[in-house]
Image (tube, rainbow, N blue to C red; front, top):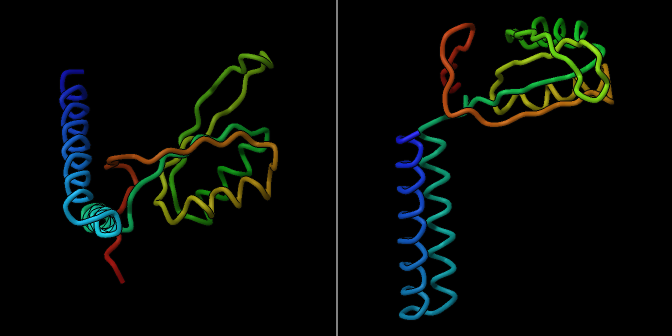
Length: 144
């Protein structure tokens, strides 16, 4: 909890510094130049993020579907990714069901979504970026 608060304060401080910096740039250099400096800053930040995380930025996906077995087989066989199966209980439906959880690269999210749409267009899919994952069958691939 303390570390999360420190990270939040650090991010707020960096944001406040950048706002002040760009406001000063706008008053001294003009609006057009300040907008170019914001664009340059965003491009540099995105490039740094790419260098740090590379193409293998991981995304966690949770899939709730009646077709869970077919979806699990396709993800494990077609993509070579591991899938964890949770037993869940529907809060509204009051039905026991299987919930799939997998970690894929950012480039594989679309493939998993296509598999799910093909097998069950009504499936519930949640995905979010991960700051890190290791162990299991997570493998970092070299840039080719």
